[in-house]
Amino acid sequence: MITYNLPGRLPGEKIIKVIRKDFFILFKKFLLSAALIVLPALVVFMILSLYPNLLDGPVSYPLIVLTVSGYGLFVWLFSFFSFIDYYLDIWLITSERIIDVRQEGFFSRVVSELKLSQIQDVTSELHGVFQFVFKYGDVHVQTAGKTQRFVFDDIAHPERVRDIIIKLSEQKKHEKHAA
Amino acid sequence: MTIPVVAFLYLYLLFVLVWLIFSLIALYHMIKYGQIGLVSILAVLVYLAVCLAILDLSYQYLSPIDWDAELTILRGGFQSFSPVNY
Image 1 (cartoon, each protein chain N blue to C red):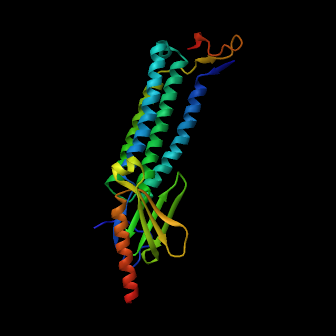
Image 2: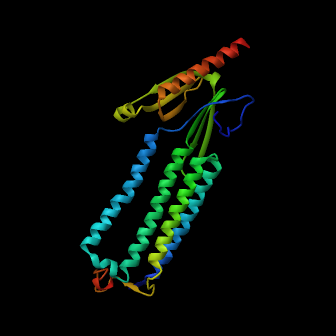
């Protein structure tokens, strides 16, 4: 049983799947954060190897400590926000609709939804070596009468998600016609 | 021209204040939208623990510093950051 606080839950609505971006996307963000720590640390290490008396100076020492501390706080906040960006970007497939929740930067959060009965076409895409090897890609959902598509980007196993959406959409349309 | 080293400390404290505001925004997002669960609680706790560790370590390194020192720049024309100062 998946538990999630659905925005505007409909009567009898059940969550079928909760989807986040593929774990590889989080790993790439982690690598970027690691590079932001390791590369400047190497530069500082090299400078201090060349000029060891910098750590003894009454001016240079406080400047080094303040810079390193400020940079450390900045990188840690950047890493945390990278994680939040990953963790709060979510797609929910329910028995009634698809909900797209996106955290965009510090001050923007977008929630959009699409009824399963409106779906006309679902496409899954895998492009490039990384997506092919790590089995992640995009799913595009085309709705009736609209040119704009609903996109699940960089999700794991896009074919499986496409199959789930198609199955649920067909089921919903069948129920609608039977009623 | 001389700049007191304590000016850099004030600049750093200003940065920490801005950083604190953005940290609170980040924590607000995580608590409000992250759904209460093991991952979100763990992420918040790890974030706070590392923040406290960085701030505590910084305090330990900064507390013995003599903040009355001054940085002399542009002494003798454009030879800024004279070697005697560092």
